[in-house]
Length: 106
Image 1 (spheres, rainbow, N blue to C red):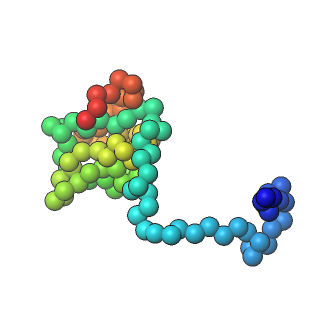
Image 2 (spheres, one colour):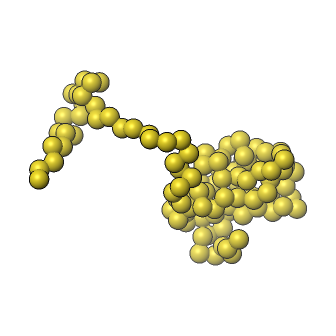
Image 3 (cartoon, one colour):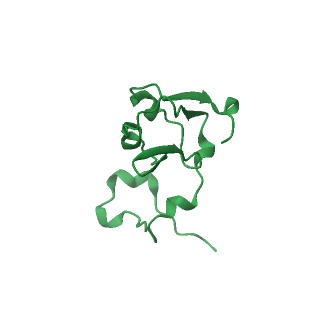
């Protein structure tokens, strides 16, 4: 059986109607895929230093800051990719990065 694949070398000349179609079949599909294994560094949360300002929650691109009743409860390491944005933006030093191989499992 021969696959009929597009000529990607000609991509820059394609018209919009020639672009391959991709479909998202259901909402929330990313929850089914654990992506935290990509990390080399992980954020670690110091609950004592945290002021629950929620800035880390706002800036996290992976929605990995866990919150309940407007209070941070932890980090979703299954989906955190270790970008460090939360650590960079924390004004209270309640988050810091550690090497993944040095981190203690939660």
